[in-house]
Image (cartoon, rainbow, N blue to C red; front, top):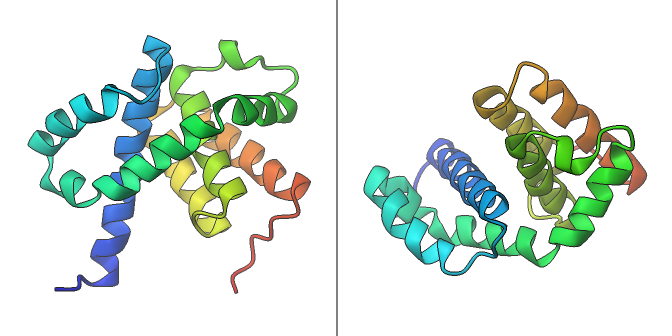
Length: 151
């Protein structure tokens, strides 16, 4: 049975949020996605059944970011030359990795991606996180000629 668009959008919010949690864990533990994805699947699906339904989106995002980890770090560092990656808050740099991957991969609409990452910044970051994330991801779009216009 197909779900209304609003619920699909909700699934995407859940997927981004869970992907962020996993990316932060990978960053803190300085490890790749295995076996963390397997372990987190059990933990997260116990917390919210939507996570189980969104798991393919979550896994795609986490594996996508991991596959471009070093390149994403370089891109973020170029966008923020005066603020070193390792000095950024863990949540901030992982929101940026997730957003940069989605933008560079074309995984989601650019404006949707930036707005979703700003929302993650509001939810999990510090006071300045949303503006920081918005500015860097917008600059990434400009640098790569990624249009924010629809259609």
